[in-house]
Length: 102
Image (cartoon, rainbow, N blue to C red; front, side, top):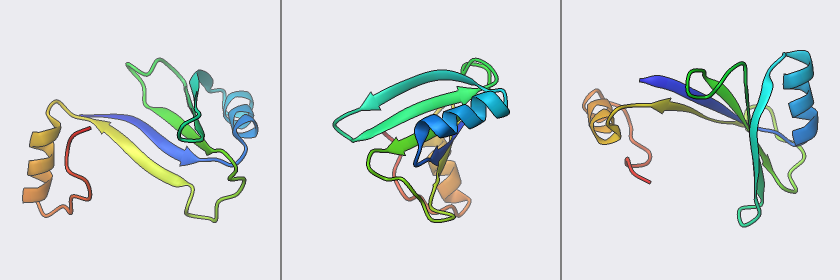
């Protein structure tokens, strides 16, 4: 397994990118708008995503503020076989909120 990224929701994408790049020294790796979903994703980190864990910032259009605790989105983990990993987690007592798959 490998930790891929952690997602945080932000109200001001450019201000957040400026903080992570100018103050924390990360690099903006990629950014894309999703007009149908009305959000923008920006991935930042200290190195290439193929070898480093990165930060995903999600900016939902029209949302400027999040209450403390509601901005956290998810932590993404890579596994060799998502179906096997899900079954193993279930057998260990994990509550599966969404079955493996697209």
